[in-house]
Image 1 (cartoon, rainbow, N blue to C red):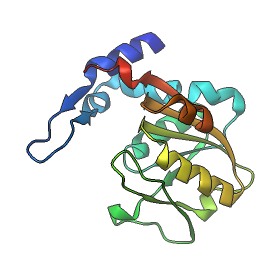
Image 2 (spheres, rainbow, N blue to C red):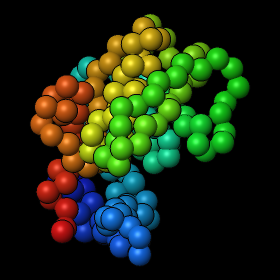
Image 3 (cartoon, rainbow, N blue to C red):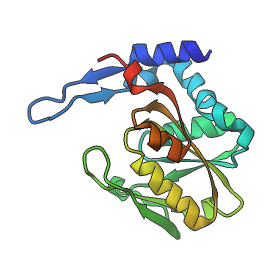
Image 4 (tube, one colour):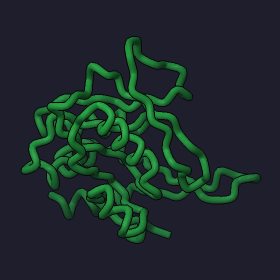
Length: 183
C-alpha cells in the first residue's frame, strides 16, 4: 500500500504558475484531496513511523493540517489538537499557548496557538503537516509542546523538502522527498 500511495501522490501533484509578479511556482496538492484512495492512505501512512512511540495526540498547523491531523489521529485512535493561526480570523475561546515561528522559506514568521486544555504534560505529541521546507512551523509547535509540558515524539509530513539536519532535529518522517516530485 505504501508504494501505491507514493505513486498516487506523485501522479496527482502539480506545479502551478500563479502568474505575473510571482517569483516561484506554487504546489498544487488539490488532487490528493479528491482521490479517495489517497485520503484513506494518508492517515495510516503518516502515523505508521510513530505508532510504537504511542502518541496520545496529533497536532497540526492550520490550514492543510486541519485535514491531515484528523486523518493521522484517527489512524492512531487518538485525539487531534489544531495549531491555530490568527490570520484565519477564527481563534477558539479560552486560554491559548502561542509561539511565533522562525522565518519560513519566504521569510515570513507565523504565529501559532494551541488551546491550553487540549495539550498537557501527559501528552505524547506527533505533529503532521503537508510540506516541510524549513521546519519553522513544526519548531513553533514543538515550543508550544514544551511550554505545555508535553513530550515531542516527532513529525510526519507528506513532502519533506528540508535539509537532513532539520529532519534529524525534528525527528521528521516524510512520505515523499521533494526530489521525487515532477519538475
